[in-house]
Length: 541
Ligand code: HEM
Image (cartoon, rainbow, N blue to C red; front, side, top):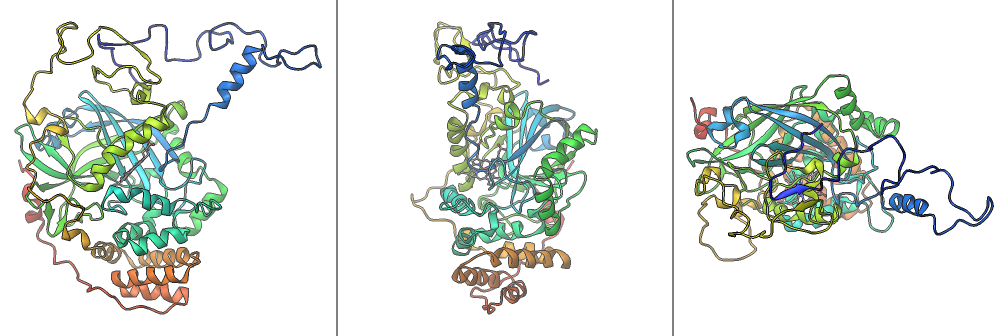
């Protein structure tokens, strides 16, 4: 079981409560009164009306009536597992986080998910997959809340409600369930062409993984790491599955969804049960924290862009093994609450506008989903580091806090001093990194580099093998074939023409539509710089 940390003096769990249930051997009410009958309600005679005074009946049904909590607004369907991260120590050259020091083992919980479908939807649908990891480090919780694709649909969090409304079922009849078979989805991505790169990944075989165990994971955004000497680097996180990357073909996915909608969830838990523990290596692409925060023309603050591994190889920093299934889906997989702002000293956010908006969104939605502000006290969310936060009261408060002075500074409860190390930037969490903020004019504009919407979709498509390209053509043809609006289909074909004319022609042929010409200049990337050049920022032993 997950070790529960020793309570600090300032925060004690209710000593009457034991988180382990059931207790004792006899059936009781929720108040601990022993029951003799839970099969028959209290009636006025064997055929008589049921009596309002039957508190056990009302308690049992009332509790049942409230068993469901709102599902996640996105990523509602998920499967989780417990495991351990073992650090190789290589990351500590650029990052002071304690869990990256050599040999440190950190317990963790991972939740894999689909994005668009509801909690009861099928597993093997064409969609992006969530890959969220909660590291219970000795310095507090670090959440790596990533996906199985390295790019995202939008560049700015203000667009998140728009993109999600476009992938959810139509509001009138709540169909279709599948993400990409919508008029609304193709309407959005063809109008809002920054979504084209991510759409290309979803149309590729990556959109229908064979197994969670065979997926890569990406932190997507660029993060900042701070070394013990205060030196800052920019990084992108990567999970590499030991089993390699494998996908279903479309016909297999459709069969799997019909025959076993729990296909991925079952695969994960069966593998763990059988002792075939899934493994991933965690790797980093490391970039110099330069003024432009870009690499070889790729804007590192644009989450619709990725940096090819051929340009910046991934440096492995540790290994994750998943070896324990949840013992209660609701308590663990459903109640887990990830947040991209759950960081530990040595890891910081960047000014990627999508990431900045996420920092607000997750806690906001979790206050609704988990019924108030105290969800970090749920066992699955509990840090394995001492917590002394001066946060008090609120819905579902389970601690009986001691003392009278939950404010800082105070001279009544021992003052509650800061930790030693104050002022040491390498040991301060995100808010304190002394980043220079450029003097600029307040406004809503993007950097010009954000206007490039097609080069990365083209690069990804052209990196695929012939049979993979054929799958992409078939996926676009199938999904756009479900789109009722001719105008939207033609608009999306125009976007494909801007990405790759041959891809566009193949899809247009299938749809029986004319092939548009590219209306933007198609520019291929410059030849790759040498790997050693690309690795300039990685400290070498
Ligand atoms: C949930 C990833 C962008 C809002 C999730 C989850 C993942 C994820 C993996 C599921 C976590 C779990 O298993 O519980 C990502 C990635 C993004 C991204 C990789 C972009 C790079 C955004 C943006 C917003 C957002 C821009 C909002 C502005 C949410 C919300 C949830 C969620 C509200 C549900 C959280 C909950 O109910 O606990 N995201 N997301 N996400 N995401 Fe994102």
